[in-house]
View (tube, rainbow, N blue to C red):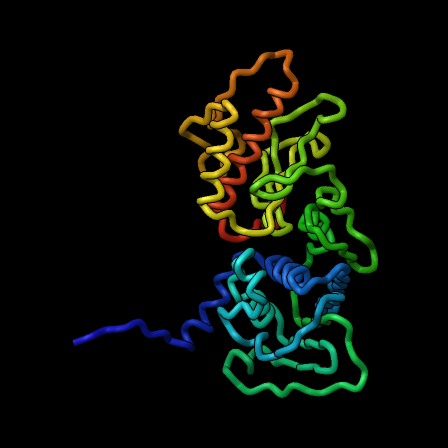
Length: 305
């Protein structure tokens, strides 16, 4: 007798909706898809009265509409798949959050009845005379009553320009708005390099969304760490070797999942008058926050408030 893995397709489709624990995940997934498509400008419009959400980007567009309804197939190029390891379920959230999805890109358009799509009905892709630059997604029946107050926070570190109902979002922690330095883990911004008011508080952004934050810290006194993808374990080992070679003592320990303060995970002899050495410790705390975000978090959080 032999056994093998089997998948109940109806059960998988039915239960997939529970993979999205926050309704605002819908917005973050659409923004992330636009960024991965090479967008430099994204417009998000939402009418709470009609419950219609529209996301328009100027990215590379959609070459194969079947990708919209293919679960657990990322559809991204090899470089994006290797760097960011997308789950391949981003657009599927639209099928559960909306009653109707209209997607237009280049010279093609599809109008999806989500209930029919989840019942595995065939959906016609139509040709259009007038081309759509990038991708335009229109969702009907979407309940996002607090989107106006949430999207600013959601996009605090997002790297692409976003307009919400015609108004540009501030994105104060986007890399373009900060003085950053490169590191093996990604870009790092250290506060206090000009005024000397350094801080151990750190915000960590993974692929543009906040995944770790202190319980409280002033936004003008916080370090920022940004990474586009998952950091391989061997890269982390290389960082630790470099630190030890430089004479920095790295001891066992670290912050537990979800903690807001470090637990003496790094030990460095610091002269109180040595500003540069103090910043060495902050830099390592930033690295440690990165370790936590990579090892313990699999999906971006939606808010830093």
